[in-house]
Image (tube, rainbow, N blue to C red; front, top):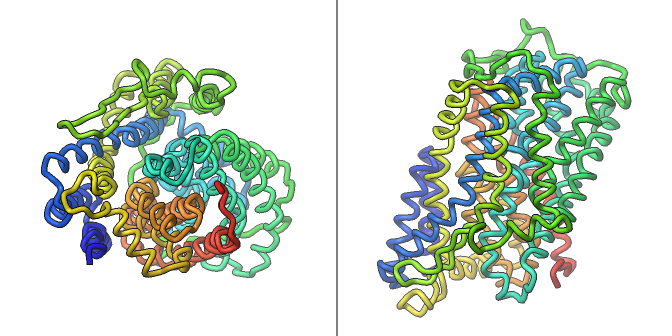
Amino acid sequence: MYAIIAFIPIIVTIIVMAGFNWPAKIALPLAWLITAIVCFAAWKMSLITIAAQTIAGFLSAIDTIVIIFGAILIMNTLKQSGGMAAINKMFTTVSDDPRIQCIIIGFMFGAFIEGAAGFGTPAALAAPLLIGLGFPPLCAAMCGLILNSTPVAYGAVGTPTNTAFNMVSSELAGIGVADAEAWKLGLTKWVAIPSAIICPIIIFITVFLMIKMYGKDKSTKYAIEVIPYILMSAVAFCVPYLICAAFLGPEFPSLIGALIALVICVVTAQKGILVPKTKFEFPDQSEWKEEWKATTAGEESDLVDNGMSPITAWIPYGIIAAILVITRIPQIGIKGILNVTTAPWAFSIPEIFGIEVGFAWKWAWNPGVLPFILVAFLIIPIHKMKGDAVKAAWKTTISMVTGAAIALFFGIAMVQLFKMSGAQFNNSGMDSMLIVMANGLADLFGTAYIVVAPIIGVIGAFISGSATVSCTLFSTLQFAAANRLSLAPMLILAMQVMGGAMGNMVCVNNIVSACATCGTVGREGSLMRSNVVPCLIYATLTVLILGGLILAGFNPIA
């Protein structure tokens, strides 16, 4: 009974977002309010405790919000400086084969943008570029969304994976984990391994769908003959992706993997290495089906084109990569200085209203501050930006982040109440809402929970539009359910992260945004239908790989 009561805020969130299309910035404050009422009425928590834990949740959200702000600020600053236009132009001369263009721009460039910025920016940048190369607008939107899945777990320098870890970090000691950082590195690795296995399959499925749905000649041979190039590009991406995940942490895999793969894929395409001898083509525009075409002019591009050289345009990303490497590799020595909870490198609040919360914000360790905001300032002299352009970048960024910030403030506050509603903070003597929900799910599904775990991640992304928010909402629940069922918590949490990542291709927010960017407003239903199958295949493969390991008794921390 109490498990059902505890689920009410999540059920309401799903109903109002998926059923009534409420934005997360409205739905999640409502969900928090319902959670607070349940805490007070059913779990007998005092109003002081509810207020203290809510504020603690708000404070915890700052870490993620600053990363989002910094990542999007870099993107908007480069748009205004002319850097992004120069990067885009670089790709137009690489290949005239849509299959190769799809892989290089849709996946590799999209993965790099995901690793650096995340939060919907890859499809918004890659899809219009594909349209400019002759892709039907609906096809470009489809490719951009499906391909932006494998890199998402490490988007915005690892925000989804870091968020999943942060949501459960306080629970690790309870399962005997002495080294939390090693556990996080393990989680990063076990998200990357199945993602890397699935990566070439997802690229192939995307190219296959593009040929079958939009090709002039829909023969399967056009998909088969590009397999060597797909495998080469997947290896070029996945090898550094896996190395970074195994040794460096969640900040690097997508960013470094895509950067290396971009260079390799561009060079091989220009030299004709592994490129199919025959050329795939789309039909003439006059032969396009009506639903393929733009229904509107699309959103006006805000890219400034001032003739900047590609080398100058890429300098900020080079600085970002260098700073991340210098600050994240322990042997260099900077990590030990910045990654602390003591002043001046962190801001701590041990208690709120006399209630222990143990909050610490490691601002110097937050990638939103260092390197993103720092590099955003460096771009100004490097790209010789004028004051109006800088102002426009900051104004646009603030407006873009506001909605996400509200959603994250209340989403993390809600989860904080879920977690901190246990017997030490309530007068009912019951376990926390989180434990009660986890026990309910565990008892309902048993071992079959391995099938449910990635779907929960997908649902979180579907309703919120973000893998990060999905991990915010469900990581602690998944962790607790895994412990209840003895199902290798690290692998179940990896399934949550992957579910949030694959959910990006079908989530309402991303589909609406992609259609607006590509000028295909009104085609959202068609786009969602085309993306459901790849999402289900991704989920099935995730269950087969990680679920198979769990059923075989494998536990990476045991």
